[in-house]
Image (tube, rainbow, N blue to C red):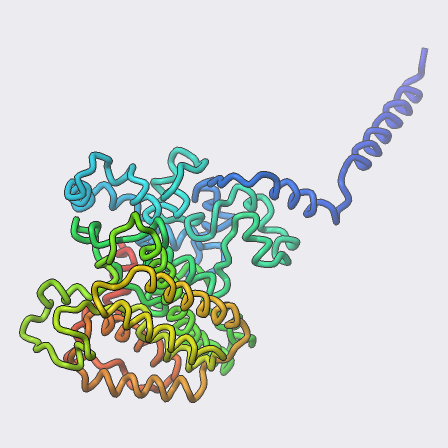
Length: 454
């Protein structure tokens, strides 16, 4: 018979052996992130997990001040109209739009609607997602990307060291850079192949798309740190004088990035519409509404400058690319002369209605490729300089005295004036007298994008 001391000895030996085996089976500390990365990278199917996966108080729902790290979910849910995007598909206007389109599919089930009112992936398929996912509206994963493969590891230091390209492979979009941020926005707010608001949809009752990135970005109830944005762009600490310099550079860059990314999206959409023989051509959503319909201001005379040499009755195209040459000049892009030439040729093709389909597709594709190259060179370039200031002052002077021109183009200019003024610090305020786009002033825009406080 063994003594109690012997039994204790054997129990201790067994316990030590178990610990040793357990320690041996544990991965080395440096391999934990690698293993999780490998697991996250397995498979390629798009899988959503829902905004609820971000809502723990220890994650993104800490309920701190707006823009504070840890309160991203709080701000989005409480203040951002994107959270209500799917809910609007149940209202009376959405039902009327579907009726006018002569479709029996409710808007809340129509893929054409879900692509922008939920997430782009829902526009062409039914990806794996929780049953409640669509009710989240335009939520975390709609912009940041399907999170199934990166959610378990995106808080690790190893993840933070990953390149944007590697994160994209795992499903996360690059929203830290202004270019990546703008590219996420334009897919819905300008349109993309398979995700577009065409003339038929507008005629059925859908609002026309009006978008200028810098103005919309500034009006958003941001759930991110503006200070980090300024520091990242200026490559300086965001405090004191550096903070002011960083904000000015950020505002200027947001305008420039928005102009180029928006123009690129519009050109790619035009190339797709012109190149697809099955699609309606010309697509009237690309043109000024008042070219066919009554002007919103019937008392305003049609001037020669508004027609810009076009024949009476011809359509006015190009409001999304109207400021592209100016933005390329501010950037001092190497190919700005070539882009200007291609855009001028494209303008002639589109204005000489009916526009020729094949040449339009060719020139739009060529211009889009040139802008894509210019956008790729944006990182690290300083753009807040004298050339931008001169261009801005010329633009203000022109708009102060001009009371004509296509509505869409003038709206695009007006929306861009305020962020440009902020970028220049003490520049003149955007003119409002006589502008047909006064309703798009920054305060009104902010009210449209932000949920009312209760």
